[in-house]
Amino acid sequence: MENSYKKEALFSTHIFQFFNNDLALKLKDFILNLDEISGIESKVSPNIKNNLVESEFNFLQREDETIIATKTFFAQCIKEALNDLYNGSYDYKISFNDSWYHISKKNSSHDTHKHNNCSWCGIFYLQSGNLNDKGETKFINPIEFNYSDAGTTHSNEVSATIIPQDGKLILFPSYLRHYQALYTGDKDRIVVAFNSSIIERH
Image 1 (cartoon, rainbow, N blue to C red):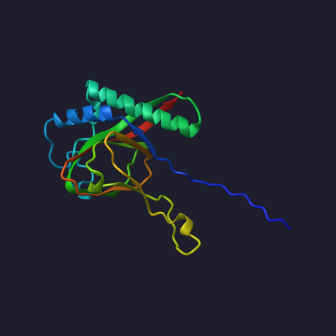
Image 2: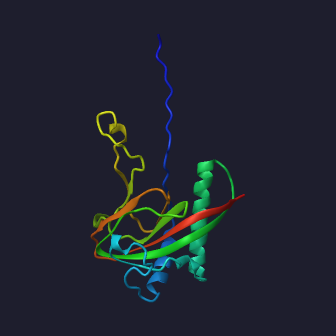
Image 3: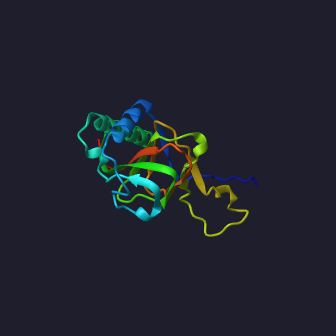
């Protein structure tokens, strides 16, 4: 008797990467010209943020040419990502629920967490340091096994690594737990991050 079977790959998770180095340079200059911040001004989970400063969560609400260009870029990337997933050419009304920036010092880290009350999240690396400075963004495998043996080694990836790079934007679904590994660079690392919701699809 001939053996036959069907295999399906279910529950895939997508992380998108886009690049805009020119905008990253402008946005970095914009941030560095703001009043200096200290501590975790957002007051969100300060106990998991080590040796970094964080703005309030309203960064993209500013009426400034650079900020407007940044929101436009983020929105275009989200639309492109969603149209790729849905194999369509839709337009979307997007809400940036929260937005902020980090300035991370040498030996900084951001412990494991995920973002609530949103669908897609983004991290835009403005100044990332050198490749050997570490501080990678690590995403935790959302599929959790309650047992491990030779039959589970096909899905034993504990985490996926994103290497920070100036001008790189990563988009990821909000259910993904992630963290910033220890950053050892002498140059400050600067990133902008956001949480977004899709209000309408046309």
